[in-house]
Length: 220
Image (cartoon, rainbow, N blue to C red):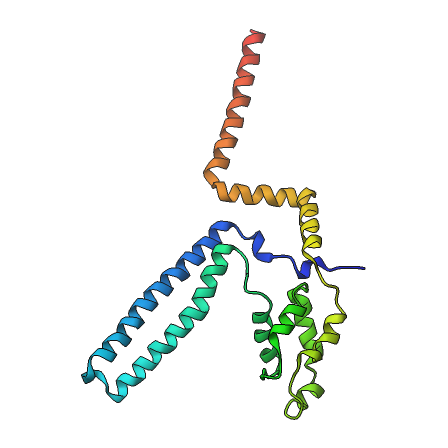
């Protein structure tokens, strides 16, 4: 059994933690500012009857839409950034990719069951399954036969599930390889900062200089 581990490796794990926290903090500031400003606008509109004019309804509608986008997008991004990985399961992946490739999500399609079935599969496997399932022939039949969870099971069966134990074993093996060790050192140096690295070099250089001087004195 051959497994393409590149399909399920957490790519965000190779990103330095400072970037996760920086983007998460920026999204959090945007979220707080948006909640305060839009909430204050809606509050004033409700309290003051004189503001209830047709053009102001349009502005309030935009404020409500902005609130929804902030909560759904920035809220999830803040949590994922501080966790340094996407923690909301596979259901979001199915919801995003099925419409992208022409599929229509109806009440008949049980996304919860799909998410549970595909819990041990990589995002790349789910993507390939959706592409293989949503052919032109299948899309043409959606008006009479809506998509169901059973439509995607044969596609998932063509791939090998990735279990947590296998992923941990692969990651521990990767850290022992020369490339893995080099990557770990690189990330540690980035977290510590450039100043520490220069200091270490200076110390090494100073040590060598002292050694040479000492040898010179002995020769004299």
